[in-house]
Image (cartoon, rainbow, N blue to C red; front, top):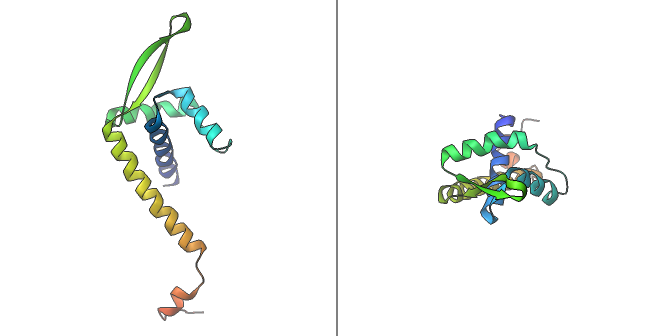
Length: 119
């Protein structure tokens, strides 16, 4: 379950970046690393299976451009379905963060008020 949650979080981060502008794979990893202050580091090789899955799910598309010395670069673009998916993920993320904050703020009285304190 933790592995699935980590992938889900990476999906959300990728979609969030692509909501701002199209990117190529390595660029995505660098944005995540720099924007997180080095906390989130992802290898390009681990990103591609996620990107391919997102293409298959219709969340993103890709296109090629030619850069210097006739090298090709593949950019990823967020599609309307991807914006919808990102919105859903962000809502769920906010719920989880709210739940975590509630636990951190827990004073011990909720359980006792229900008359279930068995200490």
